[in-house]
Image 1 (cartoon, rainbow, N blue to C red):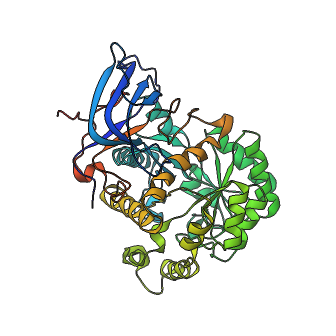
Image 2 (cartoon, one colour; image 1 turned 90 degrees about the horizontal axis):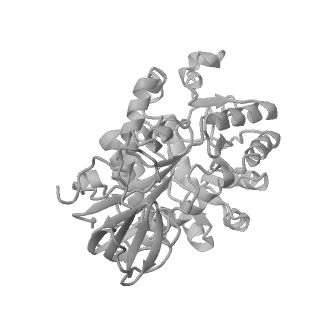
Image 3 (cartoon, rainbow, N blue to C red; image 1 turned 90 degrees about the vertical axis):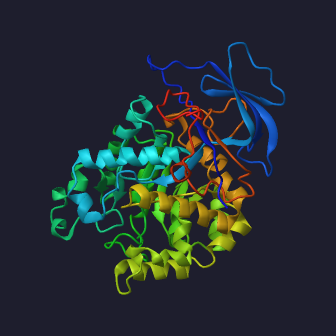
Length: 446
């Protein structure tokens, strides 16, 4: 089943734009609240003041001059958070992306940001390929889009998962357009890694992403091979700590995950090959795991990129599914901090929307609606807070509670019982009927 008819996005980014007339206070009445954590909805009112939630309770009196929105019994919940996005990896394939200029890459990324917001994602964690340019443009009010926590460029060893140079560039990687544009960096040795981390912080990164194992989409880094030495990983972690933030790692293999955790990494990107013992270690460390669950499904091999026997992607995909067979049950049993990762590359427009919907569907199919909603709200809100004093959006995200940032969705139906927000607003023509940033999106009355 799909949620239908009404989808509202209420963003309160606290921007100071002279052309935007902010309603100082907005009261939502007659709504059933999912607060980001609870197992059931609660009939409550929610009062927003400026960009913060001021009160949550029953029968709140409307302050004088406040805008009152009658929710009509709909569900009010926190804006969704995608914990693994790649807005700039948006060409048809690697060769296409290598031939693109910043004007095309940036225009496509802007379109993707608008689509993510229209699908209810009010916050996105960029996991490589993007500095802070798009984020700044959205924050300034020039473009509709989600909050963005950028990681800056990928940081990879030579011949690692983030070495996306073409074969003709192997001898001289400086000829790579993607390196020159800052989408990826190659760093060999602890000092080089430290310098790459510093360059990412200079470009506005809120956290750091490095590659410590191979992946499906790359051809230079086999799945079994560890990447970066302990000294190189430790250099990244130490440098991130100087900014009071953390390192996330692309990784699959169980032993590689354990090594990363022992060296101080806080976020495991993918990690589907972990054992029960390693899942326990993730939980003990208070770290986070962001799996790509669509890749575990049987439907994954209907994707054109992975459906041709004999290709590297097909072979790695089969290996991925074989070694991920126990992942869901391990996560359900141990319950480490789990966040949802859409992780789309080389897709835009309708194809990207379909992949985004399928990831939400697959995640909820494996872990249930409640966990899926928590993994798109309160848990990634905790992960956002791991950026400490480097947090670009200080405040609490992913919850409906007093003092939290007022990123709010309103939907028909109970998302705890239906497939949680499986279809996006563009699919169902859901209108946005309030946007505290003064968006030009249509109102409910339109």
